[in-house]
Image (cartoon, rainbow, N blue to C red):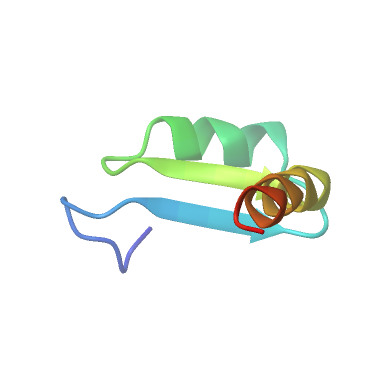
Length: 53
């Protein structure tokens, strides 16, 4: 979060998932941050890949 400016949006991908506290901190950050675990990342990747083919 420290490197993001007010007009930025953040995407944080973790292969190990997120704790409840990490999700809480992302939700209350000053800039929009979306935490994605590995399963959610793969689902989104497949959606975009299939759409752009």
